[in-house]
Length: 394
Image (cartoon, rainbow, N blue to C red; front, side):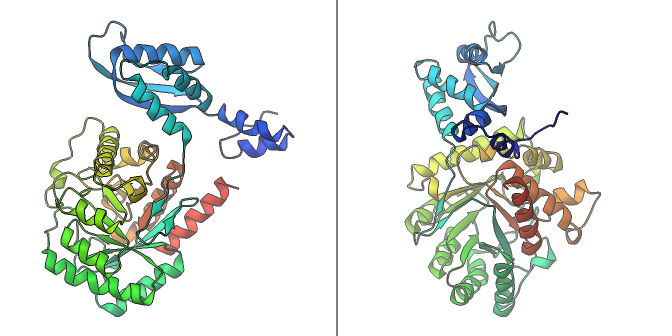
């Protein structure tokens, strides 16, 4: 009888054979092909990568006629196991030409595979041995999902307590709707909405972790003063030139989301050649730019921006290719709860009927190795994610 194994039960099955414990890791490192896309490789380097991967026992997909191609740069796809990539890294370490030295360093970082950690300003750490759940609290009158709208301190505290009891590790407070076509509110109005909510939550639940969903520096500063622990910015800290300074000075983590334009006009900016590669490249670049301003990797979380300047087909491509972000070395947040991509994919369902679709996307986040999901329905998503984690990680 032949029994097919998968990456989740392979370690258990190998160990059950009674092999030497030290060899389990050796066997598993040889078990799975990990496709890696390398962008903008110099043409001579692409030919070298092809040769070296074949020599190591793997392979490398390159454009047709790569050897004779006069294009200066091209993308390639490596096909190998961890073992093959370790061999390649050793070979590239001897090649200080055609940009291969920089590629070798990036490959070494990928192979190290260190679990990211987010450090709060008070020294507390968010670790990611399991998926972290962020609950959505909207103190707005016009959020796209009416079930998330809250008004008044009592309602906010009641919802916050429910979410914390249901397993939310982070509460995300928003005072301005950023749904497609929405109008902006003034900073003063946003502050008026969010600061009392944050103050009340921190007073009632002093050990809670609160995120402020804003792209305005004034709102972020006032929210941090009131106790907010994280800045969640849909513009990746580009919408307000003062935002990076606020975040760096407060030493708070930031969530960098991909978006084009503004919520008012973003759905007119959905042109991509390869949405997965372009989103990943943009967020990686933004993270590197912010590191030069004193916001290091321990303060950065990436969000692909589902529904922001993307149509349904592009959103589905991003969800399918979420591994492109989880391989960059930063924690990844998936914020797709009850969004239009779910409604359109399932035949035009309104937000009130998109719970099951949301849960499916939370499962995809687990499979892709993301670290956090931002959801309206905490209890249902926590239970689903924990069950899936138990199956995959037993």
